[in-house]
Amino acid sequence: MPHDAGHAHHHHHHSERRIGLAALLTGAFMIAEVVGGVISGSLALIADAGHMLSDFASLTLAWLAFRIARRPPDARRTYGFGRVSVLAAFVNGLSLIAISIWIVIEAVRRIFEPGEVLAGTMLWVAVAGLLVNVAAFAILHGADRSSLNVRGALLHVIGDLLGSVAAIAAALIIMATGWTIADPLLSLLIALIILRSAWMLISESGHVLLEGAPTQVAVESISRDLVEAIDDVLDVHHAHVWSLDGVAPLMTLHARISEGADGPAVVSLIKHRLSEIHGVQHATVEIETDVCAGADCSETQPA
Image (tube, one colour):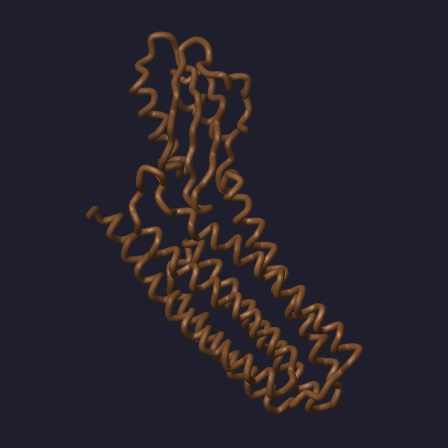
């Protein structure tokens, strides 16, 4: 196995183990938090448990994505399973929105119909939740943060940290003042935190699923650079850039080259520059010497 491939495999396996451990830790405490929320009557705790449920699902899907991504391509899935993590993120974002809506509805109901809250129980469970989230963050912090899976998992755990802090604040306010409405009000704050995470997940994963260009790749700049840097390249058109996982870009393009130029040599130069300068490791290049071949040649700008 080449050094780079072996190094990447080691990172993936290392991250997979860390995400699996964080998922187990989050799932176990989520159950305890639900029980504590029901016993204490705290919506903030139940809301935070709902957030932890989404995080548990996200971490589990991230762990599964690492495992499924190992499977090789086949005749029906020629790109393999690299997009599993993106699909998981999109589904998880939708579930986060559903949880947020439930929290908002329940919080509004409790604002108008406040009930008893056992602030002492709520406080201890929330503090325990904070410690669990700190531990989960420490576990994930040592993983490969260039991975979309790992970055998404870290975002969720940070959201959980904030949720635990909100629950602790609500418990302290109730203990000091008896103002039980602090619980649903801070639950609304948790819902806003969850909604923000959900929007980020859905927008980023949706962009990838719609074959959007990765943010670090500017198609027009690449096309212009190839014409300027390679003598025999006269024009680059019908260029498309997308990604399977939101990180590694893939590209196709048409390049019109000088009459008499060595086509294979020009293709080699284009691919080398795409890889070394623009970070595009996988590219399909069609060369033309006169007119564009194909029915889509009216596209002179990236689609």
